[in-house]
Amino acid sequence: YIVEKLSGQPLGEFFKTRIFDPLKMSDTAFYVPEEKADRLAKIHAIGEDGKLHPNPQMFGLLGSDPTVPPVLPLGGAGLFSTAEDYTQFAQMLANDGELNGVRILAPRTVEMMRTSHLSPQAETTMTPGLGFGLDFAVVLDSAAAGEPSREGSYYWSGAAGTWFWIDPETDLVFVGMIQHQGPAIGEIQGLSRNLVYQAIMTTDGNGSRH
Image 1 (cartoon, helix red, strand yellow):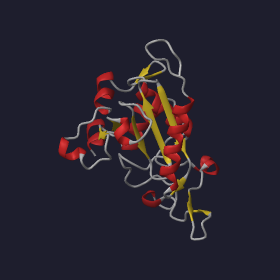
Image 2: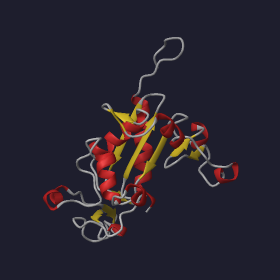
Image 3: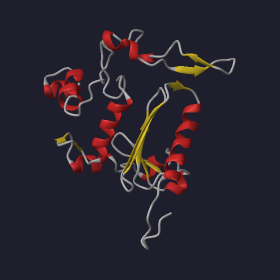
Image 4: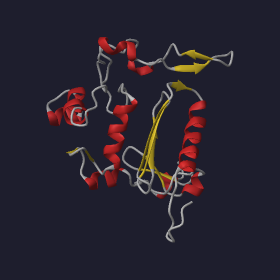
């Protein structure tokens, strides 16, 4: 509501003109145009028989017809996109707000976004070793969090098996999409982090590679 009042544009139009078009995110919107409907992936879930089945509630709060623009676009959920588009956005964040000569955010803004702003009391509600910035979970202590992501990494997950993380120290951007709802999401996300970090060659202060 605040964005619409200040910009004079509907939220979807503001996102398109100020974020999606400049970043060349041509397949991201609050709905899927009819001509792109055949590219829409189905979301699956584990049925009572233990097998994967299309989820009849695949769009949840987004409505039953993804080709129809929502009456009330949400600032925190509801976009349709592709792995390529999502990576464009994540890379912009990793570049401190800029991509291919286009600046979307100021470096200081990105720094604030990936800095935990939780009070000590609020941190007790998080997984140990994690904080929360402006839109992202932030790794404060990788050992306490029980994951290989380095301190200063930040990430978030979507409701239907989408996730990303950014590790500024290793200049790493990862985007994952499995179109799934259920406990397997957490397992796959953890596995993806382990495999990626196992594949990274790093150099210590003595020049030794490991």
